Image (cartoon, rainbow, N blue to C red):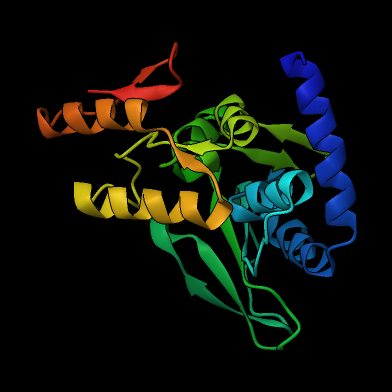
Length: 214
């Protein structure tokens, strides 16, 4: 199967699944109300939903994280209060039981393009997104991890996880893989841990591997 065809099939699969997800519709309404520019769904709402549709993996409850160009007009609503998450972004916490928790991540505060932000996820399975306007799955690294049913360390220097120790990274890696019934891609993960232990310089993308070296 060619990468383009694989992306097309995954996009169709996820679009159909999200149309049945009432919480997604509610979360998307929050993103459309307060977000400007491209709206991209991230995180477990993407890869866990696809894992469920592809492999029958229990997806569990999850929040909805959206990458938006920027936010405007932020204010509490009749269904959500607003807190602040990492990077100073708004987190909409439900004040009504039937509503989901929604995080809006403002791309203009990251200094990255959308593709860069997706590719720089901590773990490979997280490096995937869904363009909510075009109905298209994004992120070759995450798509490959999903197709191979593996999880590896991808970027240990992501701002929200860069303070984690190697032990914590490895613990979370195995938890992530175990929750999906996927294997840990030990060879690539060990390579990154080895280089992380021997250097304290910033991450540099190794485009051939889709991972980060130091």
